[in-house]
Amino acid sequence: MRRLATCILAAVAVLTGVVVAPPAQALPAPVRYVALGDSYSAASGVLPPDLTAPPQCLRSTRNYPHVIAAAIGARLTDVTCGGAETADFFTEQHPGVAPQLAALSRDTQLVTMTIGGNDSGVFINSVLACSSAGLATLGQGSPCKDRYGSSFTDTVRSTTFPALVEALRAVRTAAPNARVAILGYPWIVPASGGCFDRMTIAEGDIPYLRDLQATLNDVVRRAASLSGVTFVDLSRVSDGHDACQPIGVRWIEPVLQGLNPVIVHPNALGEAEMAARTMAVLRLDRG
Image 1: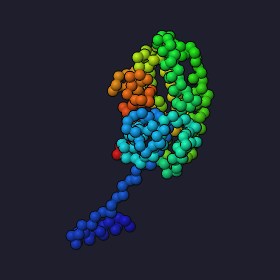
Image 2: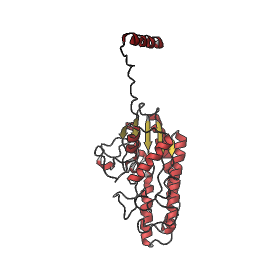
Image 3: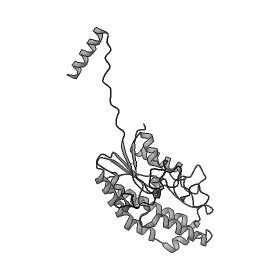
Image 4: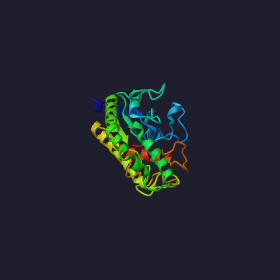
């Protein structure tokens, strides 16, 4: 019937000389995108700040969710917040800062996050502890490993892992129609050597911290697999872009001589590269 009507209109146009325009095609609606997560998602410390965000969240307009949203023309709801733990998906992180899951709905089409590193204080506590221990020995030996042993990795496996599974399953429930991705954490330190003038970690503790981060990323990967969530692995692409590298190469700013007041966090280059990898894994079309 539609084809017949089209033919009739065409015939009328030929006989009368009147040009009949085809019906206008509606533009596709922008993807409804919700960004969750911690300071690695929020790009805490990267300028310029997002003035629409709660000030405690230290969110930047150059975080990887903003980069992705601009690239694919998505409608972004960004609730990323520095210091977030998996528990903050369910409860207020700060007074007036709603649980992050509240931003999700059945209409949500895309969700990304980086989360888990703050649970039990493992991520930042290990860096600070190893930095202090390294100062005490002037970078010699492995004082952090000698003191803390497997305690950090034990906590990641026993506590962070089940918390991640719970959080990711809750995201799937709250946004059942969305594509959901969780990013691993880009490398903070190199595989060996280190840079004591910028990261005051003893040379013997560099592999120790690298192993801890590998353990964290592995539990993120396993939690994603159990929850039906896409894992964005950054281990290969971020190798050689750790905090010991020079400006313009590193994705993570060091403790000393860094450009970011929020230490040991991604810079704008790191956020852009995290966005690029996420879009590649999810095969998101650029607008």
